[in-house]
Image 1: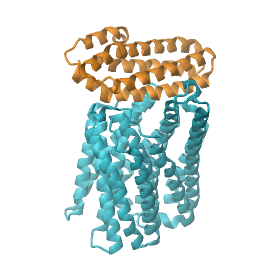
Image 2 (image 1 turned 90 degrees about the vertical axis):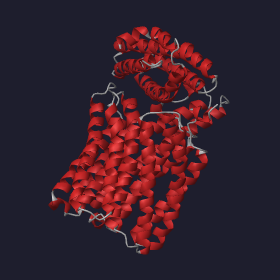
Image 3 (image 1 turned 90 degrees about the horizontal axis):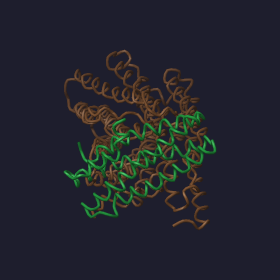
Length: 149
Length: 431
């Protein structure tokens, strides 16, 4: 298993949580939507933490690249956190249109972000961090969702 | 640092938009041309009207939109950074536009000098684009099937344009070349080797992305484009004298490969995780159903000579491929890309994120689904007009109207972008 394999699996897990939350809120089923959104929010934060606290520092230390791809990824994490905030506000106000618009934007941002990671950054990390302890640390960080995915 | 690693190099918003904004108006021109010339244009694939219509859609609509999408997509999807994208786009796009108008006018009015004049503009525009895109695609550190599909597609585009240039010069100067065979090979490379491989390569990424489907089966993504290329090369051998009985043995597997792409895409959409429908997912369905219909019809034409003898059968295939597959897929893609690029570039201006309207406020869902319905109606009318020539003018008007609505939706989105950009700048919150 490659270093970044747990993150790849976790992307799919987050996609599923996103679909659940979006579908419920689009149908104005707020009772289902509220906990579904909470799970999505929590798992995305876990994922960001795995990357920002474990993977990116290890990659930067191994390659000396601190202002390249990892910086772009961190900036996109901030944008995703902002959109999650908009979704949270819309959920509290039971505003399905605003929730749907922010969710659509989050989905596309998240997917093109994942695409850049999966096609470019993760292969670079796998090369730079082969036989390091990062894989085990990532698996531990993402443990619960990966085993249930 | 290796410059190819700074993968935030999404090009300036004007790069894709310059192409996207032009594309629908060529569709409007095609619709108006059909409405003006009526049933005569669709009598056979060799009428001046049919040749002009084909190139208005293939070069004016499809190639414009695909060039814009390619310059945007390869930076994000495969980290391929094009050299000076703004300069490339602002050179290639007007040259391509001019070349297309010259070629179409030359075909329509039978003017050899205009055909000949179009050739250097095409070679310059597409040659330049192929060189900068190919360089970017070979330098990127990324891997994967989408990257390989992009590389093959850009090769397919180069072959298509060279064959097209040869055809235009042959028509203009009366060179002794096998015109029918050369045309069949040219269109197979254009529709298959360039457009379909590009669409498939993009699909590997965006179908799972937009609809949260499972990924395409790895065996399919690995073999689709190489097999398609293999059969295209075999198909091209008809340029050399040989045994014509071989051609169904090349065409039928080729059609089977197309059907596999359409069938798998429809299956992935059917079993998708995201339950919400939108104009993009419906447009993709229309495109894939058209591709299946194309494959079945083409197989029937190869197997049943009495159908092949009717010149309208080639027009039927042309309508399915151009208006059914590619105009649909491209429109669906633009309805996702344009709202997202508006949002992405606005929030990069540094305004508080909550001040930037979300994607659904860039083009309304009603405007997109209304235009989709009109497009489907126009497509059905065009298909009916192949066999009921009395419908040709009405079909032309409907197609022109649906393309004009698309053009208007894109213009409205760009105006919204400019409006919010000015507001953000006026508020002084930008970086």
